Length: 156
Image 1 (cartoon, rainbow, N blue to C red):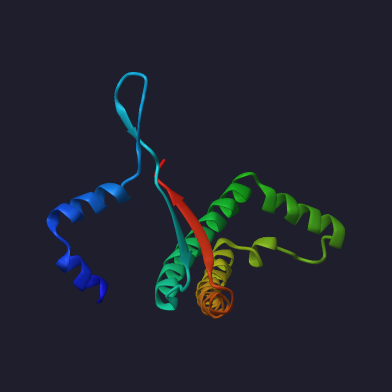
Image 2 (cartoon, rainbow, N blue to C red):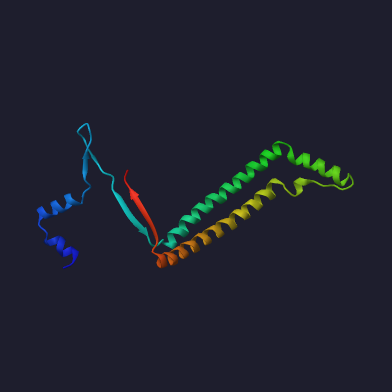
């Protein structure tokens, strides 16, 4: 007899008794109110869907890439506002001599720095998405061998 057939053949009073037996025991507090005992459920994370990992990691890595570009722009603006680049230009002229015309902003201008940060952010998006998908596949293979990750949940 299958579990569905057993459930269908069970009378209503037996269902009510079995439901009451499966509920956690209640304990009475000193004020007379009934507090329920927190339930604990032990679950096993046996498989992770690689497609959902790919979607989630893509969105998170895009957010990290945007944050990288914005942070690069803010740091460059702060350094420029503090006069760091002009001070470094003066230091380079003192070291190299006045006959060599060196302008540091030709190499680390705002546009060039943001372009480089954008390229790094795009590479970051591709690599993080690919690596997290590969990790999901590796987790599925290893959990098939050892049984997965055991987690205990409680409703405290």
